[in-house]
Length: 297
Length: 292
Image (cartoon, rainbow over all chains, first blue to last red; front, side):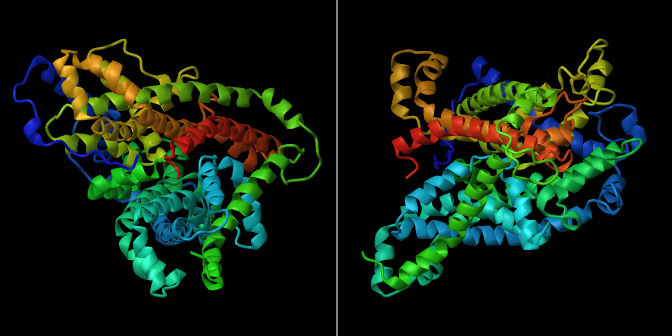
């Protein structure tokens, strides 16, 4: 499952272009167009003035590309009550993202480490239970959690949403690190024990430095997952910390009067930017993340 | 190796967060939700036990029936189409094509984007006045109609289109890993026997890829049950209640309609459905020894 598809050596590629090969490339070309179409339309729409959009050439390149819509989306688009643009959401998402990623990876790796290398009674039961609950939809937990957080006084706040992301990231993060640590040679761990290293020393000095590849995968997985989250941010972040996805939906879907499609698409692109950069920047790591986190999804 | 008291304490301290999450969040919250579904809680939870009354009300609720109806349509179409498209894409890429990395990136990039973004883009593309319908008409297909998103009986299919677009790349990645794991000898043997390629795929390769199909199907199915953001962003459940889904039903009744009893009954129904789907899969995986 964790295997990542490797490219085949180019030398084994058939040399001649037969009819079947043409058909194959035609299929790939058409499907690639289908996948690229929305991105293309987003980009060209965001660069057109509304007058041009109203003429209805969805697919046409902008006659005179302008970034006005981008500026408006960033600084002055209205999200229901205020008109300060999507930048508020961007900053909120960043403030949610950074602590959530760091803390969820710390807790997840520590849990995975304890479950894989240290023999504790009930470890397998705990792990098995975590894998089962990872599949349960949020709707089952959400209301009791709202009550618990309001009872503790945290209510809807930045701390709450960070804790929530840590909680719901825990099964995947634990799985990721547990499987990785379990795959390391156990002699390493035993030697450290013989040398007198303690639980946290082995974790911090030996295991985590060795787990760099898994940390990269975890960062990618959590960054895209948390950035793209909508429902948890909506419920737990509070009005002052609403993440970018929620603000984007407000900008686009709660507009009164005529819709500014160019601003909408610019805001949409801005929201998709970070995951896209992570995706195109990380290459095969993203696929590795999918494969490793596939148990949850 | 026997653990000293010290390291045993350390281990327990490290597992404390997980234990707490397990007990309080998962077991605690789930039990409370199930309990509330048996009460007549409205805006605030109460403990007036009413048995299965909320479930009766749920079954008589038009919006819930529509939601369930929609999620079945969406689930069947989304899972089967994403599996089909994803598998075909993986097979195409597996034919030693040029620029494999680029093609793969193109197929997979939608998966990196959120459902909100996906929903909003497709909402724009499917806009009947300025979207794809208009393009088709301007190309000379005067009678072309593609106004599914504003028609109640077809709105749910728009969610399928967007969902398949977003998730097919994931299936492709899983399937490609599976295809690359197929022994080269099988291909050689098939070539010696003169079997056409498609026959090899249908009769030999697909049956061998059960694990990849199962993994992809389970991933897609859990995404189906969770379907919420896409419906909110793309159609907001509309037109009317035409594209409502169960997760949205729960959220709306919890936070807008102040009907906690009914909402938790719906959530519990979702929970039972998920367990019914996932339990056999996890059992199967555990027996295969994949989850150690």
